[in-house]
Image (cartoon, rainbow, N blue to C red):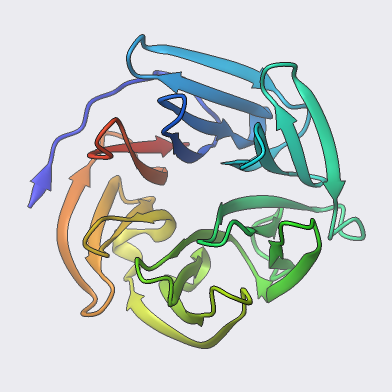
Length: 257
């Protein structure tokens, strides 16, 4: 099944990424990594507000106590959109100046997971970190080239993740109480013709919607059978991420580079 798509923001983003729907404000937060920009798109008005956060920004998540959390070039930070105040919290890779944070999300218990990558894209210098609610940081996966697309199953028992250059999506058994992962395995493999997996999200049926970077499409995959159920074809090749939003969470927002 092929689905249609409409252009909402002609942003000319260098690397659009990290879309996340804010059900309280009814806006879509997203970032342009290499322009150091954070955005809030209001679909009701068409207004796309922007903030310059001062350094490359990999992703954004909402904070339960108010405001946002960012994964930046120099680590995890809290950000208040109302005042523009940025508070750096912790940098787990201060010893790796040629790395930056990339994609990330919060797990079902509110822990902030985000991965790093080297600016040259090639070396396996990246890692995946978990920042707990007390701001302690734990390295969870290492030897990563391009960290991307982390999401959890509806029953909170499985974590899905990709190192994009693997051309595969991995699954891990996930413990929601401790935040631990184990039993890594590949659940979906890709050919180079369909591009590598970038960001992805999950729908109400537990299916993965995967941005295929370099292939002009988002595909809906069944992670249990590794079959394609639907796809969205776009007029640009560098598709980076996607997220459901809107009042009924029935609209798929897609970012590109």
